[in-house]
Structures are given as structure tokens and as C-alpha cells.
Length: 333
Image (cartoon, rainbow, N blue to C red):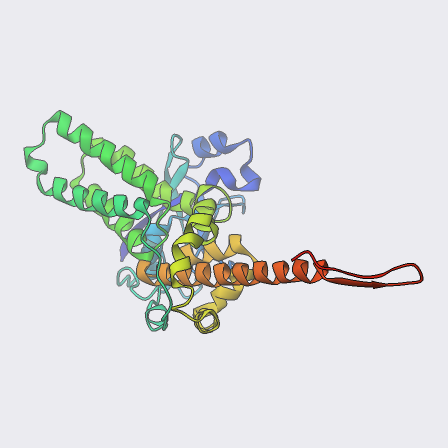
């Protein structure tokens, strides 16, 4: 028998709680809560909903804790978890859910299958990695290095570390790869295990940032960042040098073979496309090759469209007019 505790986030965005979030958080501890998989969520297939004691959908299990939630759900014959709300956080609106699970075997490890993405074949051009991603890698490595030196910290060093983690969390929303999602989870676990109350603020920030990133893939800065990577003039300019080296039709054929029809999702609904990229936990290298291919095909198509438009304009300049009063050729070449 194991006691499982999970954070429930996304509370301010549930319509049943609009205007009453503070009241709900104050009242929630001590009340019952039930968790159920959200089978109809096309973007996040492993999302787990939280229902309160009045039957209202009030939030979701936080993304970093989904492997534990599914580990517990797989031990439940009814595919749900019933428990209690044991705490709430008003500053970072969330509640702590706790339940007892029999025969719990630990977090699931197959929640985000990656082999189908790693097996995808791509032979087209690849864009340079954005500066934002380089900054993230630097900060990730710096966080790891500083944690190994923690015994030597003074108050100033600890304050600098907390500032670094907050900055890392702010940048983190732009990298929707599986690696960074996993690192966020790992960092939360490391800071929690240290048990220093000074870290609680950044633990809460990292926990909430996963949900914030998910929301902003369908609107807001995350969506705009990724659309910029695929559609900007600078991106197309960078790819111009590859126009003759690669065949756009071949590249597009490879894009069409990307798992789960995500290329067709991009063409139909860019907002939902970016959201699905995030919730699939796809490796960064694979995402970036995929995005590069999309940008290359769109650039090539734009160039072809421009050439067709110019040809049409040129043909209109060579007009033969006939009639009772006129018969002439206007050639402005």
C-alpha cells in the first residue's frame, strides 16, 4: 500500500471556478477529489482530469507528475483515483491531492513512446538552433554545476541560484521538446529532495510552468515563437541557400510520413499542431528537423507562387486586342 500525492493545476482556467478561485482554494482542503483520464483530449492523450466534491472539473494533474498518476491509475480496476485534497496554494493556484494505492509499482515509463518519432526519416535541410535554446542548455548545465557546489553556498550564492532557476523556467516554455519536459520534472524532484524551504517558490514556479507552456501553445508567446521559427522572413532567407540542393517534393513527402499526421495538422490548424508537438514529448532533434522541413517546403512554395504571379503579370502585358475600332499589340518588355 502506497500513499500518492499529486499537484492539481490549471484551476484558474476552469469555467466553473471563474471569479471564485480564491474561495475554492480556501475551502478545498479536507474535501474529496476524484481523478480520471481525459480520453477525449486530442492534444494531450495522457491528460488526467480532477473533479471536486461537487462534481466540477477543477483542474488537471500537473504534467511532471503524470507518470506517477498513470502508475497509480493502472493499479485501479475502475481507472480512477479517489482521495482527498490535503492542501492548497493561493499564490500559485493549485491543490495537493492524496490517495492510497494498493500494489503501486512506481511511475510508468512508457507514457510517451518516442521510437516512432526517432524512426522517422528526414533528408532535408536543417535550420540553425535558435539562441533561446542555446541559452537553455547553458542554464541547465549551470544549474547542475551549482547544485553540486551547494555545500559551499552562502546566502548570496543561494539567491543567485534561485534567480537562475527562475530565469530558466521563463525560457523553458519555448522549448517544447521531450528532453526539456523531462529535465523540468527531474529538477523539481532534485529540489524537493533537498528539502530546503527556500526552494519552495521555484519548485512551485517550475510545476506551474508546465501547464502555462501547454496553454500558450494554443495562444500566446509559445505559439508565436514557433510560428516565427517556421514562417519568418529570416528563416526563409536562411533556407534560400538550400533551394537547389534539396527537392521540395521529396522533403514534403517525408513530412507527410511524420507520425500521427502532424504535418497535415500543421496545414489545417497551426495552433493545435504546436500544442500536439508539446504534449507528445518528441525529442528536440526530431522536432527541429520536422520544423526545418516545414519551413523549407513553405519557402519553396512561396517562391514558386511568386514566379507564377510574375509570369501571369508578364502575360497580361502582352495583350492582343481586336475590335471594330482597334487592333494592336501592346508589348511593354
